[in-house]
Image (cartoon, rainbow, N blue to C red; front, top):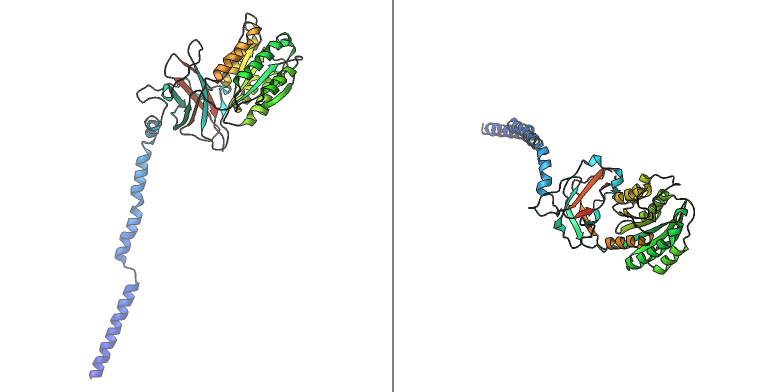
Length: 369
């Protein structure tokens, strides 16, 4: 009997152990339901938060430029007002930032008073800047009387129309190079009529440049636009960035032989980031179409046109250009909200002192990725 009781107890114990093992292997319905509910409920507050954030986003986007983006101005001073709409800018007033993803903009500019006298010694906080209607993300560098190396081209009109004035042009060009070229600067010399005559490529040797100038001989028609287009493409564009690039073009401005349009020539100068200074050899009392052409090209590229009243005063134009090149400012900055989409971005740069006028390019095309 005792053995039967002991056997029954063992069987009962085994049954209880099996039941406990089976129960342990089955998932409990009680904790499972809250877990699934928690998983379903977790995204709901996140979706609501995203929806709440989307609602005021346009207002935040409008407020951020004024609150966070730096400016060249002192905080207490008024912001510059952007004239016109970016879409109304002429393609003649633009240049291009080169390189995939390039963001830095290097703005070379000149400041004059109402009488045209160059103003130097101004500080960063004396200017207001808007890029595409917004303050720059940050200013990398501001330099007075920039010492960036100079790459300058002398283009002398050698067509038949300027034969009697050519000697004065040559002499004035040589004097200019003697004064303006420093150790790191380089220049080239060419003549143009119906074709280009590059007598001396980029060099720092003034003797070689002098010889090149005096090798030029006048004769033929005038293909001014073709010459300017080709020169900027073959000479200036190949120099890349990091230089002050300028062309001094001595001509009467008349073009009777070009295949390219004036706008073609201007756009190539802008792509090459080259300022064009025009010195007119038209000494008549009234300006003609050629003078208007020189003005249009110079202003579109950030340069300036000069109109001597006597041919002997051509040298004065060269001296004024020399003074300007020594009086330029350099501003390097990173634009805000920059997109490498090939779009046009306006540049509006002004001196806060209304007595001063800033002469600079009007904008640029962002690169395309």
